[in-house]
Image 1 (cartoon, rainbow, N blue to C red):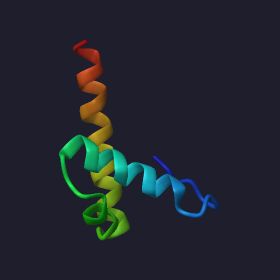
Image 2 (cartoon, rainbow, N blue to C red; image 1 turned 90 degrees about the horizontal axis):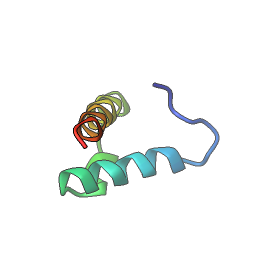
Image 3 (cartoon, rainbow, N blue to C red; image 1 turned 90 degrees about the vertical axis):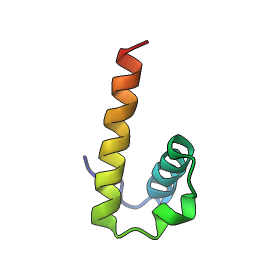
Image 4 (cartoon, helix red, strand yellow; image 1 turned 30 degrees about the vertical axis):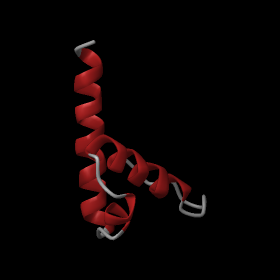
Amino acid sequence: MGAQLGDGGKWVREQCAMLAQNGNGSMLEFLDEPLIDLMDWIAANNAAVAKHEEGK
């Protein structure tokens, strides 16, 4: 997984919004995470979403 570069932070904000929505949390909490930790959260969220989609 690679981060989008040159988009002014749009990709990171979108990922944080999805994390907050899927976890009933605050987008700002995820924006405060170090980037390396944030990437782990994004990967875990994407895996959970994929697993959920398989079960539909």
